[in-house]
Amino acid sequence: MSASAIFILDLKGKWSVVATTTKNSNASLIYAFLYKIVQVFTEYFKELEEESIRDNFVIIYELLDEIMDFGFPQTTDSKILQEYITQQGQKLEVAAPRPPATVTNAVSWRSEGLKYKKNEVFIDVIEGVNVLVSANGNVLQSEIVGSVKLRVFLSGMPELRLGLNDKVLFELTGRGKSKAVEMEDVKFHQCVRLSRFENDRTISFIPPDGDFELMSYRLNIHVKPLIWIESVIEKFSHSRVEYMIKAKSQFKKQSVANNVEIVVPVPSDADSPKFKTSMGSAKWVPENNTVVWTIKSLPGGKEYLMRAHFGLPSVENENAEGKPPISVKFEIPYFTVSGVQVRYMKIIEKSGYQALPWVRYITQSGDYQLRTH
Ligand SMILES: *[C@@H]1O[C@H](CO)[C@@H](O)[C@H](O)[C@H]1NC(C)=O
Image (cartoon, rainbow, N blue to C red; front, side, top):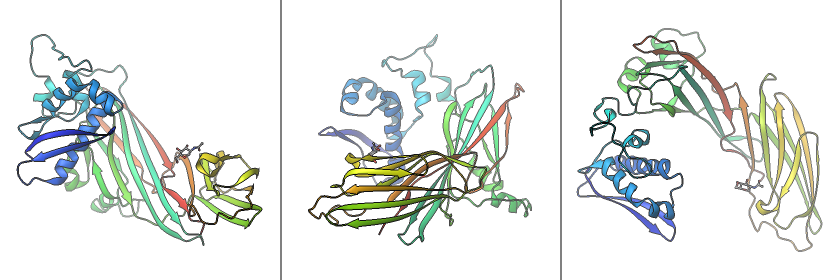
């Protein structure tokens, strides 16, 4: 990309990272590189702010030196960088000075010689549901944003293969009848062999050590909101406003939504709150102008009610702050909305050890909003 300089600009406590180039370069490559730099710095310093930039000037200089050579991006993986640029800014020299194995290695994201007593892989399939519902109950927008996250504790240089119930794969192999899911916008971690995936939809890779996101995807499908909210808001000017909020769980009875939070906006001049709930508890958060109704666990196929009553001052403050939507937060374990499933995870290492894969499914609320007008 031939960037000639990278600056970190400090604008009154806010910072920006800027690259300059001497000729036209691929803009998306530069963006990806700058994001990567910020990620590396954040992993080194925890918080990236004026103070940590000042305190770590020497390390930043060393990191920039390793990350880019002659305008070409080099290793940007912080786990690998940490092998030779330590937090103290001292070079770690093991025995005779030589480049770390990983830098000369074809697999830049994994070190050689890793050893675990127990070889395990934890696979999390996490899906967020983004839903926007109009005041009269129409779903205006809905999509599923999924991600497969791995936590890898494996010795040596293992080869992994992940099998999903991927629709395109099932069509390729003539497995028409099985339940399959059509994923869009699939993005992979750099360790996945893309050509292999394009050829036969096999997700094969040598994983980094520890936590990383293996892939993300999107499904642009019409999803029925998992928790349906109905609201009746009655405003009596100069005296009070009353809310009746109904929450209905529209998923299977065997599933449970945990930590459900229904956030209802209220006028900024409201006072003297009173609540009644058929389940969970409600509280007024005056600094946010909201009522938060919390239900610890909400099983499928249930319906609960919350009533709130506020006093309003005599001076009308109509629409001064607009009408923000009601938002809903929750988490449903052991379940994906899309139906994406891990069919297998094969783990092969030349020493022949047995490794165990563990799979968890979680659905989260994502951006979940219901308009009230
Ligand atoms: C107030 O709103 C902020 C931003 O949405 C949120 O992070 C915070 O938790 C809210 N406060 C309470 C007490 O709910």
